[in-house]
Image (tube, rainbow, N blue to C red; front, side, top):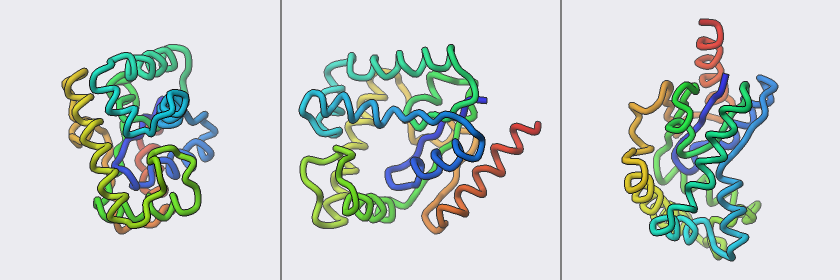
Length: 187
């Protein structure tokens, strides 16, 4: 089974993807790491690289080609990705949502521990700054995905399972998500 996982910034998708992969013994891939590595290679932040992607389709094509190839060559993995649900339509598609301010708070707290994710030029000094940067990134992502693919990645109808993580612990999110996955594996 291929599981694709998307979600709002700060929803816990990276944490949950890791836990699911460990629980199922699956390999975990993340296009976010690939995207950030490509951005860093060019000396850009993820926001800047996303903006470049609005005019240079090659930015997304490299990731898209990787995802498609991966789905043809392997099975039983989890992919944390904005667009994998679209490129692997037979995958089990999961979306984790979160209130925007709560998501920004979680990202802010993580960035205080580790700013190596290369999402921002400087580590933000307030949650409000993080929220603003997230909204900028969402705008460039949404513009790009609509322009290139004619899809809205935040439309919940694209997913098999949607969970609002705002008031849930990571353990509870993992538990609910695994219950859904197990129901599909046993079907």
